[in-house]
Image (cartoon, rainbow, N blue to C red; front, side, top):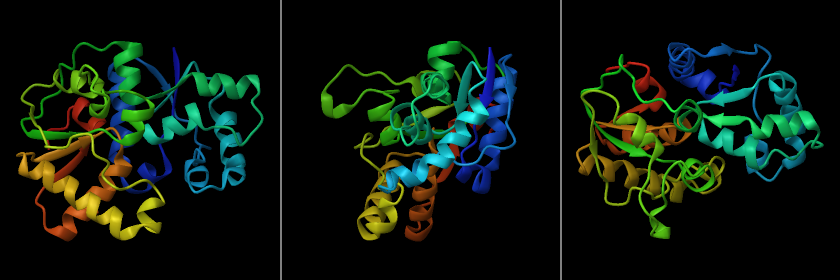
Length: 247
């Protein structure tokens, strides 16, 4: 399988360790990975802001870069959700349909496609709180939704339990949105900030040393809220833990 690695623009700019960890992890698992150097944004910010037509150029470039791959993998649930479910600012050609069908968020690729059952190099001797973003939880369905009362399942938890030394904190409201929501955090700043502070305090009160997530965008928001509110908690992307980071 030939994999095209997409590293979202905000990860490339602010959290490059997450992109590097994703590449290293896929290669440790024996995958043939390429990183197209001409990649930019997937178009999600424009589409989420109601400017769908303005996403067309970014979407067209994404297809140009990734149409030749068997799978497109990215360490971002929100970007994967956009490509899979909202990638419609451009004509739906065979290439576009191929890209949409074969795009995966990292957790679902590891869990559903590769079916990884061990990370022998990984050890994380810390107590973590798992944050499932709204995109991964309610769009990609990588975990059960508590509001539906459905049987519990969690693909990221399944992967993390294979890491030596890790333990888990359980916040009172694990499925609650953290308030990021892309441009929502700008247009509704006060509401967004209150939701973010509530989220990090809930994890901290449950005993979490780290908040771990498949979405750095949510963690970026929560990290800012935690620093401003003086909540002593750290943040790490799931790719970094699975790749062997210990702190």
